[in-house]
Amino acid sequence: MRISIIQSCYIPWKGFFDLIGQCDEYVIFDRMQYVKRHWHNRNRIKTASGVEWLTIPVVTKGRFDQPIDEVEIEKPWAEKHWRTLELAYRRAPFFDTYAPAVRAWYERADKEERLTNVNELFTREIASLLGLTTRIVRDTAYPAEGVKTARLLAIAQAAGADCYLSGPSARAYFDESLFATAGIATEWMSYQGYLEYPQLHGAFEHGVSVLDLLFHTGTDAARYIQRSASLPLP
Image 1 (cartoon, rainbow, N blue to C red):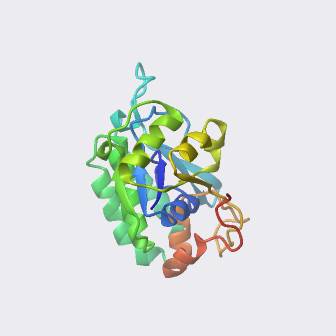
Image 2: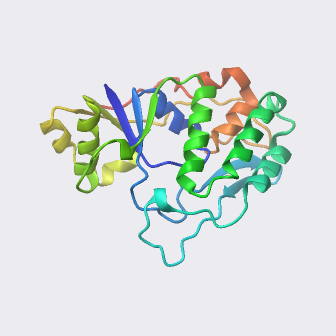
């Protein structure tokens, strides 16, 4: 059973869903510390003026050590984000197809007080739209102690995993030997080899929210989150 344990992001890019789709289970790792200017509460979209950030305003003053699942949203934001998306993508081929669903997600998200719930909502809905069958659970589903690799290992063991798929940025701290000793294989995700697709607003940009992909390619979106050449590295 292949598992991935990663902190949540706001309307993630296609690579995030590629990783999820290659796993049997994705654990939302939101008991970890929130990091400012990360992807937890923001992502990028393409607009007529260039790449633009959509950022959910969150409360951070005096809460520097707070975990992601305790981060509170500071003020109304959802309607502004939806209007920005509408302006940027209303001429995309499949905007009208997905606009009712995406707007409904924003209406639901607007009622949430915590960032983690917003991120989970969008992640689940987008994964479903892409046809992914991966089980998605919160890290609270599993008892886990320790820090860094030890904590990841405890979750993987509690979930009954025999393979762990990690994002490449974790190489800086991840201790593969702990997983190997426990009999769990480690694989490393590669984000190379994605196909380009017809995209509004100038030169092609891979590093934007997956909503860009959905609005431009419709039901073909699932094909574009699968890399054309590379597989997870050993």
